[in-house]
Every structure is written in structure tokens, then in C-alpha cells.
Length: 213
Image (tube, rainbow, N blue to C red; front, side, top):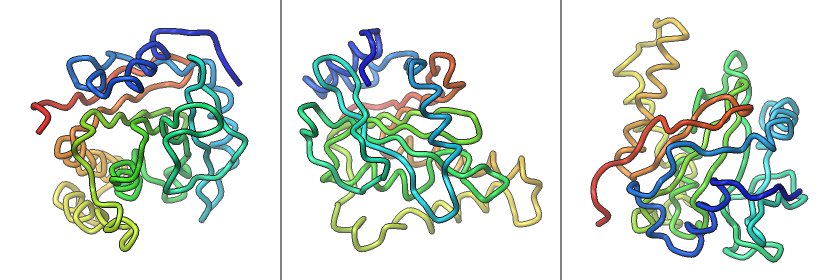
């Protein structure tokens, strides 16, 4: 399902051709995925407990394509269906059913594994679209460690979250604590976070700092 070119597609093409374009100095202030808002919402509505529903995102001939594979896998090749693999879209369950309010530790670990050729992850949760951009191609987590322990970051994340909100804290406070804990990994691994309504361009909510090393 292609769409006409826009600024987001132009940046994605540059980021594929040169990892330097993923540096925070060149990251867009907003990412625009409005043409797919309805599709993302539909997939999110079909998410069920215990299932990871989603699909890979491919850039081919300057346009985005979603291969007909409504499942999410931990690994994809750099070239997929004649285009470049950018990352994956998936959805979390609504928060009232125990879903995470943003990318959870397992999502982050999968995005950072050393054999992941992508740099963009999309997430739909409770009507909100979020985009995670791996801005530093030289910071990653060993794929071997992620394979052996898919919940590699979960224990440390839970500890960080508990520091901000105890077991008896109200739901809103727990959600905020979850986001604060996640932000630790955004800073540590130089990940940019975009978040907003899928019907509008997503503004950047966290921009990594520091030089590549």
C-alpha cells in the first residue's frame, strides 16, 4: 500500500542511505504517518491477550509498504520484498487490560539487538501512535543476550518504575512512572521518541543528546 512522497518519506530514504542522517542533529521534529492512521487503529483493535499483532515496515522505491504478514518477529533481513526493512509496527493491549503505556522493556531490547537492521519502531496503544527511532547505529545490545533472555531489561525497568510509584499508587501515577523508567533507556541508548494522535504529525517527545561513540 504505497502513498505519495512527503517529508517523512524523504528523511527515511536518507536515513536508509546514510546512518549519519539518523543523528539527533538531523532527526525530524515530527514524523507523519497520517495516511495509515485507519490501518493502525484497525490492527490495534484486533490485538488480543497473549498475542503480538503487527507487521514489518518496508521502504521501497521511495514509498512505504507493509508486507502481508500480520505477525511480529524478532528478526528480519535488511532487504525484504524488494525494499529496505525499516522496523515493525505493533500494538499493545489497552491499559485497562494490563498493556504498557509506551514501548516496554522487551520492545526496547528487540529494537536494540545487534542483528536488527531496522531503526524505526511503531506502536499503537489506546488511540495513540508512538515512534521509536534508533538514532545511534553503534549502540546496541548483543542479539545473543536478547535471544537467551527476551526480558533482558524488564527487571531493571521494574525497579526503576517502583522507585517512582509504589504498588499502592493510583493508575495514572503508575503510568507516569512506567514512562519515566522507559526514558532511562531512551537516554542510555540514544533513542528518539515521537508520540501523538495518528491523525496528526507526531511531535518529538524525547530527543537524545550526546555524541556517537
